[in-house]
Length: 159
Image (cartoon, rainbow, N blue to C red; front, side):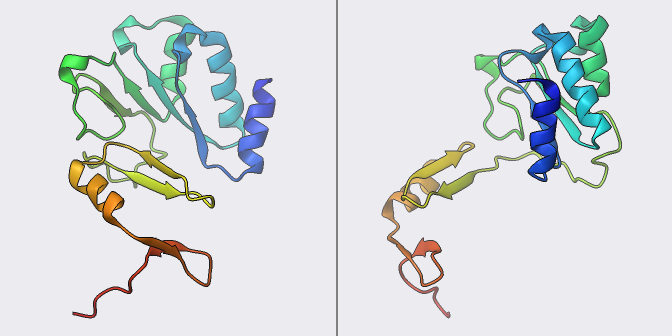
């Protein structure tokens, strides 16, 4: 798929921006830079994940870093794993807001957990839920209401 198609899909979907990660995007710096530049031309924000540190970058890889709005940089190190960090997995990794695009965003460290229950009852959990949350999920009786929403079977207490 060409970068124009990727960006157009994001624009058509009403997405605010692109998150570029996985594998290592800066091992393909020309293609990644082309994607970033095309996205920027359409007003999309760029969130880049890289295992490299800034001082390791040059050429197009450095241009990718510099053109991104938010960059999470640094290798994941298992011995420094920390599930209480926002957007990263080990404490050596950094988050850098490179532009003013997200200046209104209040960055607070913490563990975000997103739970989605699919129409077929499937459960998707993103983040690092603690044992208590997982147990609450397992203990919950869920049902579908008249509007098709899935939630607890009992009504909330009025106390």
